[in-house]
Structure formats: C-alpha cells, structure tokens
Image (cartoon, rainbow, N blue to C red; front, side, top):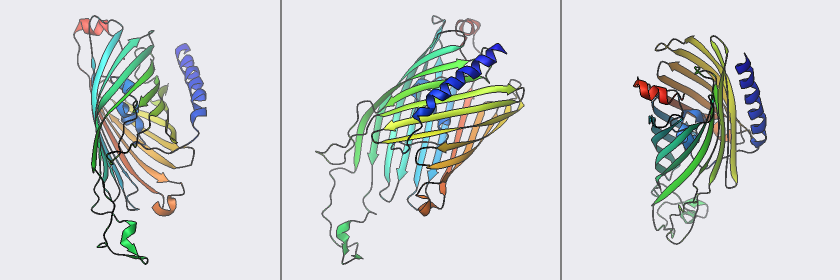
Length: 346
C-alpha cells in the first residue's frame, strides 16, 4: 500500500504542475488524437520505452472529409531495445518512422522519414531517465492543376481558361529535419499496470526552410512539446488511465488531455485481454472532443476514436471531425540469463 500511495501522490503533483500549460490550441505539424499510439512522433525519448523488446505501430487519421478538403495522415513506425551485458543499469533503443500527410485541392503533402535513437539510464529501482534523438529527411510537395486563382475571376465570373501569372520555382521541397527529447519513466517493480511517463521534446530544431520559391524563406518553427502518460492499478481487474499533451509551435499551440478506465478480462501471461473506455478533449479554443475505445489482446493493442468538432468550424463540418485508428504490436523475446540479469528494466 505504501508504494501505491506514493504513486498516486507523485502523479497528482505532476498533473497539477502540468495543468497551467493547458492554455491555447491549434497546430501545424501532423497530430493524432491517440497521440500515445504514436510514441516516436510524440517524443524520440520514448523510443524503446515499452514492456517488451520490439514494437510496431501504425496510425491512420482522416479529418474534415465532409468539407470537403479532407486531411489524411498515415504513420508507420518500428522501434526496439538493444541490450548490452556490460550496461547493468542502462539500455539503448533504436527505431524509425515514416509519416505521410495530404490535404486540400492542392494535394499538399508532407513525407517524412526519421531515424530515432535513445539511451535509458536506471536512476533507482523505479525511476528511469531517457534521452532521445531523431533525424532524417522530409519532403513537402503539391500539385497546382486543380487550383483556382483570382486572375481567373473576371466580373465575378470564373473561367478556368483565363491566363494567370502565378508561378512557382518548385512544386517540391526536400530538407533535413532534427529533434531531441527527454523522458522520465516511473514503474512499480514487477508490475506492468502501474507506471507513468513525463517528458519533453523539441522538433525542427534548426527551423528548416520549406519555401517553394527559390529565393524566399519560409521556416518551420521549432515545436516544443510536453507530454504525460500514466496508468494505475486500482483493483484486480481495473486500471485508471490519465494522459495529457501540450505543444507550442510559433504562434500556434495545442493542449489535449484525457483518460479512461481499463477493464482486464484476463491478465495471465500469454492470455492478456482488456478493454479501455475513455475520451480526449482539446482545450483552449474548444476545438474538439473524441470518445476512444482501446482493445488489448496479448501482444496487440488497437485504438479507435472519432473527433467531434465543437469549434466555430462546426458550421462547415456539422461536428464531423473524423475517425482515427491506431495499431500496436509488441514482441517479447525470451532472453539469455546473463542479459536478463544485467538489465532488469521494464
């Protein structure tokens, strides 16, 4: 009981410290309502931070298709732990992520490939500190064939054959991108159900130029993110879940927080099965809320959510934000005895 009480007190302090950050909302980078289902996008210091050895994740999000200038986002990722018998209190993590995002009549799309690496150091029996780095190549591109221009409107009448003077040096831009992050992981020994993470990350560290004009500069502003994720076992079959994410990018920022309750049908090793019911809410400008249903089965985790738009944009969307699905698959290997003894992490 003493450990459980200390967990609850620590979590409460973290939530109270985190709450003042929930002040504004909007975003520029791709985002997911189920942000915990895309950990490397959230923070490179979450690379390798999971119960298991190898993790595959996939995410799909469709937004505002009823307008109709829908946003479609796909993310695929892989990460794993790297054990070293010489590191008795630490381990490395490596991974990679591929993101694709497309929106609007211009088919404006962003393609991003990033590699991620991390190092985790055990501070005490229950506390672990991780430093993560990410870097790779990104591309932004669009098509101008379906676009309309003001010069094509004459006497309030549109004519696609009217000539235009608008031109672009490039329809595609390739650029490097880098980021880093820090994460604190707390986990009760011999328990997968009581744990929390508190982290911060910094993306687009060098403000890459993404202008389609040859001699112009349009920078992607750095994105500072703070995130919290936690779960607490409150009964043999029930856990309480609480999480939050805030980030600021240029003049835009976003805050989303939520939680839920998880019911375990079976928690025996190799037969785990659970169902989680919850909700997420975007603060600040009252952007949207989303019910979330998550199903756990052995190594699988599948999350379904649907954004309900409640901002002023509701007039165009009729409240239809869009569906999202996240899938996670974790492989746990049987380790040789020396490796298992030298690295009792997670």
